[in-house]
Length: 318
Image (cartoon, rainbow, N blue to C red; front, side, top):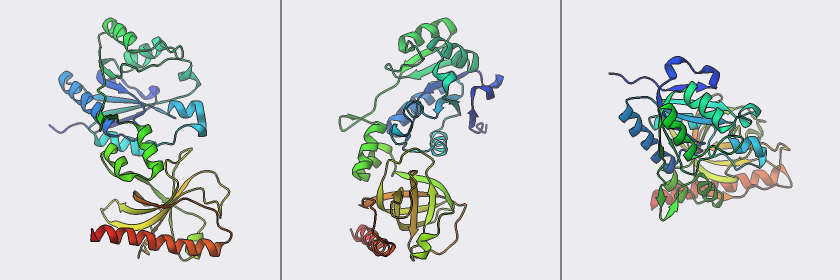
């Protein structure tokens, strides 16, 4: 029997009667790292035991972004990447709930009644024993167990994944990325850190400087990375090209505070506007900086290209 295709449900108003009856978990799942993957395995096992679809409940914006705006921790991945990663991990459905004033003011009891019971009719919930929710902060593991007994669903605690004696978390991964420690970040993620996005039109300045770039808007308040990096770019058809990338706000040529990813691919002249590419980060070369002139910027870009090529050559030889 062919399994049903995964389903993305945007908002409670899009829940339908056939979405009722499931096994669920709730969280941000930023990065979908090894710790998250352990929870998703737990979820899949519970779904198999109950013979029901698995559902991951996420919020957009993430709650800390709603409350803190651009002061919130940088996202490891945008919503599109998160959805793809969750489905790749075998999740049957994703319910994405808008985090707004209405949800902010929803009590814990109302969340259980409206979302878990009336909306999804859950049969089992996987959450951490420190999970708190509701405007009154009364929502906790104990309340969920009590309400589960009343409404006919069970609750289990998520397993905590330790690696080298430390908990795997999005916070740890952000810190490692800030340090440029991509090897350890990859260990916690279970894959190399990358950013996926669609190539858009820029100012064409790179082309004028002899270093044409593919520009990818990050669509987030802040980036977990800042600076210049040796990267590879993977295209949908599987082609991989080496290059150098800048992540930041381009202080020499732009006053914009929104971060952007600019990628220059070596020996590559194909027009790729509108193409989705995955940019994998391998080595930090330097911090982003402001230059006194475009000539100085151009000279540094040539140095960045050389340093990136030297990095890849050293990897080939080792």
